[in-house]
Image (cartoon, rainbow, N blue to C red; front, top):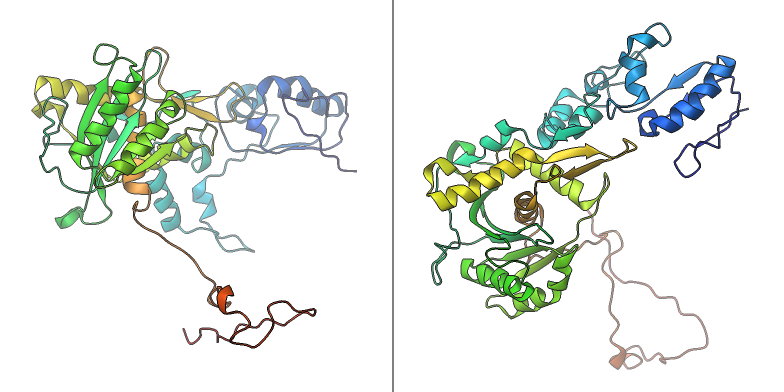
Length: 404
C-alpha cells in the first residue's frame, strides 16, 4: 500500500517517524530541512534497507542531497543521476524533445547565465548558501560615457526629454532615501531592438542631508519629479514609504501634467514581487538594456554617487534561508541596498510596465459584445411591459465574427 507522508517543520517529521517502509520515494528532497531529513527519513530507510529514490532540484551545498550526489562516503550506496537542460533537448526513443536548444538559450539570455535561478533550475548546480546577484563584469558592461544630473546640477525649466520615470527607495533607520531617474530610449544603428533605460538622475538623502524628515522627503520627491518632467513615479511603500503614499498620490494628480503614481510593495519568497523584479533586472543587465554613466569621466561629486551605485550592486547577494527552500535578496550585514532597490523599481516601471496612459481590454469575439440596456425606453419600443410574470428569452441579434 502506498502512503503519502509530508515532512515539514510544522509536523517535525512525525508523519514518517517510526515507520518501516519497504520502498521510499522522496520528491523535492532539497526543500526538506536537513535536520528533519537526517532525523526522520534516513532512519526509516535504513531500518528495512528499503529501496530509496531521492529526487529534487539542487539548492544549497549545505544539504543532504549534495552529500548523496558528491560525497565519497556515499559513492557505493547510490546510483547517481544528474540531468540538466541539455538532456531536455535530446529526443528519446518514445517521445520528442520537449524543448529545442533555441528555447533554452532564450531562457538563459532572459535569466542570465550567472544567475542563481538559471544555475539551480536549468544547469542543476548546487550553489553556495550565499551568491552574488550581479557579477562585476555584467555591471561594468552597463557603463557608458555621458553626463548625469545630480541635485547640484538640477535646473528648473530645463527640458530633460520625455519618457522619464522616477524610482524612490524610502530610507528608514540607518538607510538612506535614494532617488533615481530613468529615461526610456530607442537604441539606434546596429543595436536597434528593445528599448533601453538610461540613468539620468541620482540623489541620496541621508541623515546629514535631510535625515528622515518625512515632509522634507515628500516635497523633495515631488520637486524632482516635476523638474525632470517625469511621466511615472514609483515609490517603495512597504514600510515608512506607506506614510507618504497618499500625499504623493495627490501631488501627482495635481501636477501639470499629471504624473502616473505607482505604490510598490515588496513581498518575499520565490514568487514575491522583489524576487521577480530582480530577475527582470538581471535580464535587462544581461541584455545590455541598462545604461549608467562611467564614473571615470564625471566630477568628484557625481563619481561618488555612481561609485556607490556600482559598489552596492557588486555586494548584493542571494542568501538561502535556514531551510534552504527559498533565496532572499539583500545586502550583506552592515551594508545597504538602497541604490539597488531604487534602480530595480525605476527599471520595472520603465521597461516592464505598460504606459501609464494606456488602457486595454479583451473580448471573446465568439460571444459578441455585452449589450447595455437603456432602461428609459424599455417597453416603448418593443411594446413589451417592463415587468412580466413569465420568463422571456433574451437573444442577442448579432452575428458572430468570422472569416479570419
